[in-house]
Amino acid sequence: MRAQQVFKNFIQPNSLLKEYPQMFNWIPENYGLPQGFAMTNFTELKGCGCKVPQTQLLKYLSNINSDIGSETPDVSVVPIQGTERHSIISTIDFFYPLVENPYAQGRIACCNVLSDLYAMGLTRVDNILMVLGVSTEMTDIEKQVSTNLMIKGFNDCAKEAGTSVTGGQSVQSPWPIIGGVGITGAASDEFIMPVGAQKGDYLVLTKPLGVQLAVNTFQWMTQVPEKWKAIEKHTNRQELSYALDQALISMSTLNLSASQLFKAHNIKASTDITGFGIKGHSDYLAKAQEKKLKFVIHTLPIISNLYKLENKARDFGFIRGTAAETSGGLLVAVKDPDAFLKDYKKIIGNDWGWVIGEIF
Image 1 (cartoon, rainbow, N blue to C red):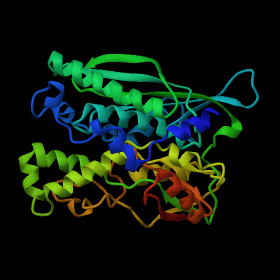
Image 2 (image 1 turned 60 degrees about the vertical axis):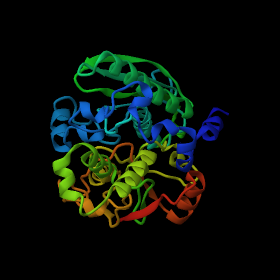
Image 3 (image 1 turned 180 degrees about the vertical axis):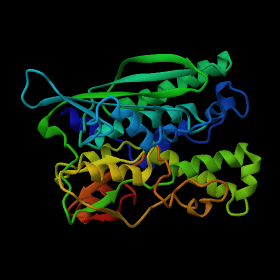
Image 4 (image 1 turned 180 degrees about the horizontal axis):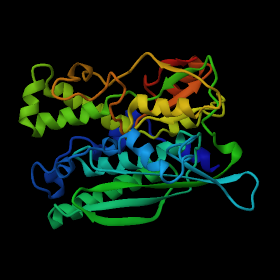
């Protein structure tokens, strides 16, 4: 019954503007903040782009336990003592602002926290512990308003997901921080260990790529004149505003929309696409498989009007697959992609979902 209620609460991407208008068209003066106030003014690293580089992270982890992350690099699965088939499954994610709007930042952070659990086929999350950093660089009113909005955005998203924030930790920090720990208890038949891909499976991606390009180029247009000069002849305000809205919609959509299909389509391998980019996360997933397999990606769906900006003022690594994503889609190994995508598009309510590769 609880899972059915969660599905009922799910808001389709095309309905986000109606349900959460405060996420779009950020006007700080409406909240008593100074003109030009933006969360991105208080950080140099954005969203999941703040992750430690993958190669360096693996070196750090080897000093703790060489098996950490061998099957589920973003999630901890620990059997519950005294039971035969139940585990505690948890994940942690937090980052610095990547959008101007603190309410949107909170919602994106919550979607990102839950995404790792959805990538394991879970559709229920028992609770979340919030991680919060309040910027010491803001005035008192800026702290109060932006922090309240971030928390509200995070909490509203948690409610939509059918879970709740039950605690956490807060600190003072020069750069604002928002994220949390998602925790759930589950029986072995309620989730997958993402190691069962097979030769002949197809790789499906459930959201478009390009979030990092969208948020950075929009900020260049509004706040970084020297970088805007490098791209203004290739784009315009209308294109970048549209791209930002599409990025906001993508990052603010729960990956619950895909995870609820795992059982019906017998999904045995999946990951979400975030800070390590499509290549980094697909490499991780390929190495985690029980069988030796080759993942080949041939298509990179991207938000409209952004591809032409790659390498214009900065090399984002999009073509190499290393461009960071935040609250990206699920990469799913599926036997019958047409059937999976047909069901997915009914749930998501738009044209998202692409076959982007094959497994050999």
